[in-house]
Length: 282
Ligand code: 3HC
Image (cartoon, rainbow, N blue to C red; front, side, top):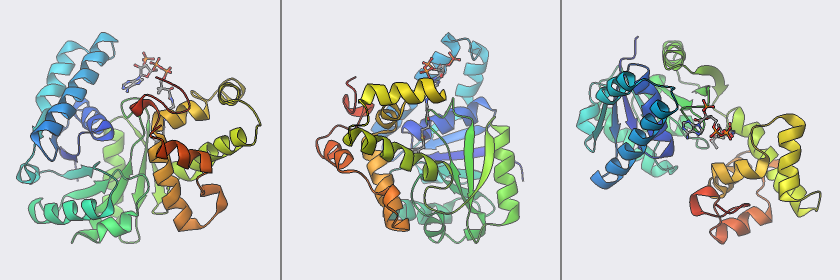
């Protein structure tokens, strides 16, 4: 099954990135937001990112025009009826996601695949809100989406081999590398990354080193592009706290337990780059 038309739900940081890579890869892409204001903001972010790619010489002006021509914004579910694949990147709220899927399940053609970009919720639970559990998967992208090469393709007990194969083909068609992950909380990357980030906070709390020195150590000692505190600020402390709580609840292992400092920083509104202050100031 070739995927020619994609519907992206949500035009936030992840949704706009996903829409951008799809449109650049020649796929007709419709982005749905909940209201005109969010749509305008999201499409603005998308256009800015495409313009930056042209400025950096990564995209020609003609290719940008072509990508823009393939991008459509909407606030109406009906405009997604003909899509071959729906990728959802809305707020990490299980009720909201299930409500959205249930509504779209009635509108979008029955052979289409549904995928969620959730980083922490169970794909199985989301799939159960639809009548297409065999065509329901996780497609987990990484921030910044235009740069990060990986997409985790998450299958549930119910996903069909055909759906998984179609998802792998799609991921390659948009220039990304797929890996197969089971529907376990955190999949592969967050299962390893989140304990590492939490451990960096614990190391700092225990006086092992300063924020700057811990970051410098991992950057220069292990050639990580960012140290753990820069990455925490980049991902968002609120997001990390949220994911850690879900993973801790799932596995009941202390390595997933959010350290007290993380909780206090979230309470204090220090979410990282998005709020202007996290472990660093912006
Ligand atoms: N959109 C498009 N391109 C971008 C971008 C963006 N938002 N941010 C950076 N880039 C591009 C730049 O244009 C540049 O490209 P060039 O080298 O061809 O000119 C390249 O990425 C490097 O950018 P910069 O030179 O501006 O800055 P850095 O070298 O510091 O790189 C970074 C920035 C790519 C973000 C790098 O620091 C990095 O890879 N950090 C780690 C990111 C990471 O681990 N992401 C995963 C987070 S976990 C996640 O998403 C899962 C979730 O569930 C929590």
